[in-house]
Amino acid sequence: MRSNMDNRELLSLIALQHIPGIGSITAKRLIEAIGSATALFEQRTELSSIIPDVRPSLIEALNCPAAHRRAEQELEFIEKHHITSLGYHDEAYPSRLRECDDAPILLFYRGNTNLNPHRVVSIVGTRKCSDYGRDLCDSLVRDLASQYPDMLIISGLAYGIDVCAHRAAIKYNLATVGVLAHGLDRIYPSVHRNVAAQMTQCGGLLTEYVSFTEPERQNFLQRNRIVAGMADATIVVESASKGGALVTANIANSYGRDCFAFPGRIYDSTSAGCHRLVRHHQAALITSADDLIEAMLWDTPQSGRPEVIQRTLFPTLNDDETRVVGLLGQHPDGLHINTLVVESGIPINRLSAHLFELELRGIVRPTAGNVYRIIG
Image 1 (cartoon, rainbow, N blue to C red):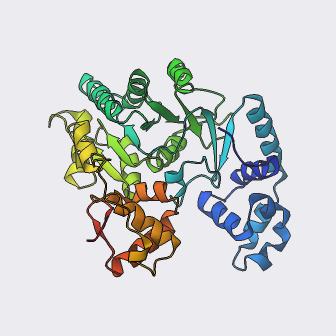
Image 2: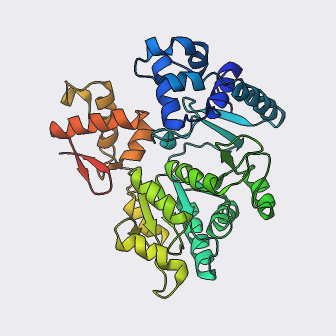
Image 3: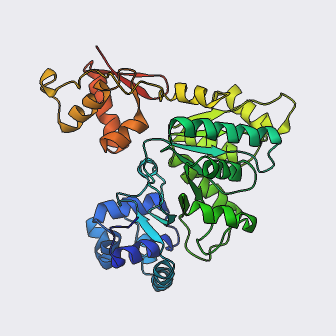
């Protein structure tokens, strides 16, 4: 996998990540306004005329030689270790994640799999999983692999359910990607080094953090948004009443993504979080891969589809709307909005506007779970 960025833009993106007080959302807004990270630094002194509401303190913050020195060090590390850098405009950047407001402007990736397959699920859970949780994880991945051999499994390479999900994916020949809370110079926890090495051959390791970043607590909370944002659905296998898996589930909900949880025995502390998610309607209860497949409408037959609805039936549609109507016409049971984003290539903010317009005109209708269907 190769990035389409030149080194100047890559250096500027890395430097931008190291500017104090500028997070992902602000960084993306600045880049969109001026065209590139390189132009942002080159035209720093002219920013107030280009972006009238920009704060003087932000302009001053961009004058940071230390950030550029750190970027040059990181570029050397990237080139030496053959790491792929993915800016958020790169075609290979995870398209589902790109649609999240707080998605990182830059990712570092070591691996060999496509980050934008047709189906992606995140599997998360407690670090102190039970035999029940391990067995659930294994059977879930096994059954998904038997039906969708091109599925991608995302998790965080942590103890417990995370590493069980990765191991099961390797066992059943599914691609799997671990999202790290540190740089690619290390593996944490170190006992998962062998699993990580296997993953680079059948998936990969992904992070927003530069080399020599320590695996600090706040980084794990930050990386959970990537775990949730990369996937069509987040599945919580086991979780205590508090923990990172619940954080990931809440983030998935905030992104409008589907979330599912497996039940356990009512007295098991390792299932208390799953039960709470279901009780508060933050996750749908599932007991098997078949439940997930049915809820995600992945069991819709792929043969015998009706003919694509032609533009001649709706002569006033623009090109984007025609693409959306055509895709929905091929799927009478509807498509999830995330699938529409991937298959149409239309950014979610623009797609949402088109879907609303098509709904007002009586051409499509939304149903439960962010699924859209053609009318008639």
